[in-house]
Each structure stands twice: as structure tokens, then as C-alpha cells.
Image (cartoon, rainbow, N blue to C red; front, side, top):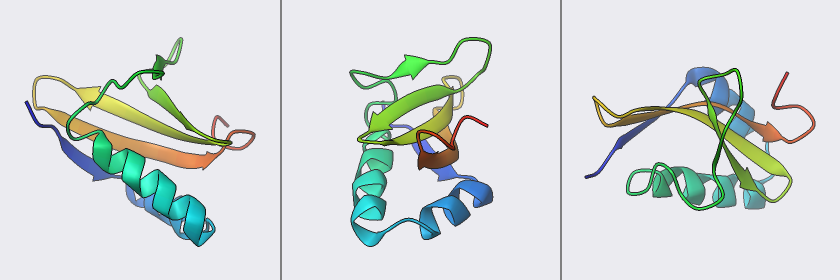
Length: 84
């Protein structure tokens, strides 16, 4: 079953500030969430609703709604900045 992926405006702005090569890698991984919202290596964050997907030194934080089959990307950024 395919999921619909949406990116919050704040996460879009974070992605716009990234170098082009990093932006391309992150975009590819975000689009892959349509088919596999819980890929190998993903981790549910403790005490939060978000899941974390690692892409090198960058992280994608997102929320999965299994009833509506949607994935909402809430934050994207370098690992030292994204959790704050």
C-alpha cells in the first residue's frame, strides 16, 4: 500500500538551505517513504511521535499516520541541529 508524503513548510525551508548534493540525497530518501514508511534503520524516537531516518550526518524526522496512509516530514537537518 502506497503512502502519501507531505513536507511541512518549515522542513521545506530547512531543505532549501542545504547544499545541492545533500538536498538531492535527502529528497530521494523522502520520496522512498511513499513505498516503505518504515525502512530498515528507521527508529521511533522515545517520548515523541516522530520517526528518525539517518542519511549520513543528516536526519529526517517524520510522523506516520497508518489510518490515512500519510507520512508528514516535520524536520530535516544536520544531526546536531535537528532535534532541538
